[in-house]
Length: 269
Image 1 (cartoon, rainbow, N blue to C red):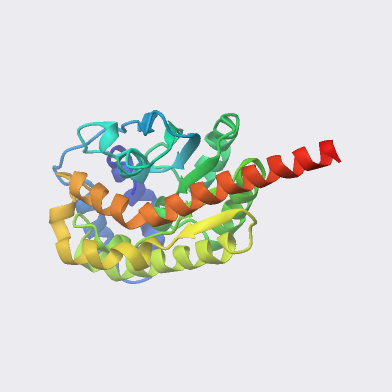
Image 2 (image 1 turned 90 degrees about the vertical axis):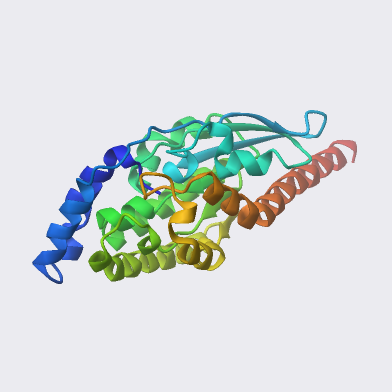
């Protein structure tokens, strides 16, 4: 989800190509939405140690947008990824490089290099929502996402989150929702195509998992800014994404064990 502090800029810059493709009235609605008198929240940080302190150590590095920085929450520990890893049987060192409002190019240029230096056992990536709202060209999104996933997967396996239907966001004017729904679906389809073609990348199908829940609960799962999920929304994400994160960690640790055994065998041979 995008950063509220950048919401005015996001709508003013990102939506016009969508709005002008239909009717000028949508542009007026977008400006009205962007300037609504609503709270603005800062990014939070999920970095810390979680899970079982006596378990096997696991390093997870996260990067992406505000779906990993939790604007509107009380503390970084309430962010879905922090809630989730605190349930795990491993001793998890979580390091966050995420920043609200980031598009895929921002992550590629400003987060990926520093994140790679942490040499994690697993990357968790959440990006694409701001590209949908900014109307990033599909060609650029595809190219930058492919570069980003290739760069990260060279260092460690990647769990990459798909893009849900952003038209469920209560703050968006109703007139814009069909356009935003179409953009979300298009960006998510590209995400699927790219992720499926990069080795050591697994995908979380966010659209299939969470859209119906967020659509049916409407404002119950959103913070006071009516734009970002609240703690209940983050808990819903944690519950839905848990099997995918567990599987990704187990696969990463299993691959490391296999590599270590192969190395030991070659040394003793």
